[in-house]
Image (tube, rainbow, N blue to C red; front, side, top):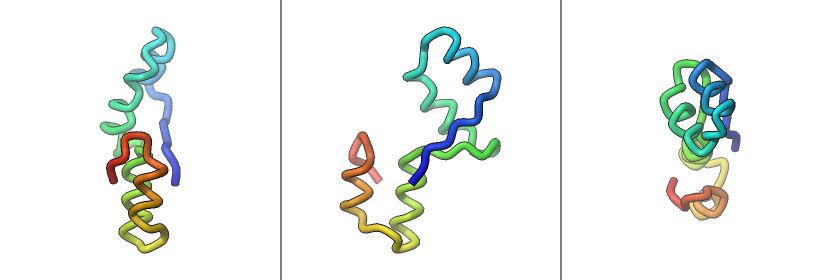
Length: 65
């Protein structure tokens, strides 16, 4: 599973301003730019039968998949 952030202007501004917890929202809205949240990546692995849902839940910080 991966979490992918492509640094765009919004991401760069958040990093520069020390607001890194807000990067999750940039990743969530950046799908068209190839960004992927960990949750989405884990969900995809579960749907393709590559991992069990319980493994995905354990790997995800917030426990949701």
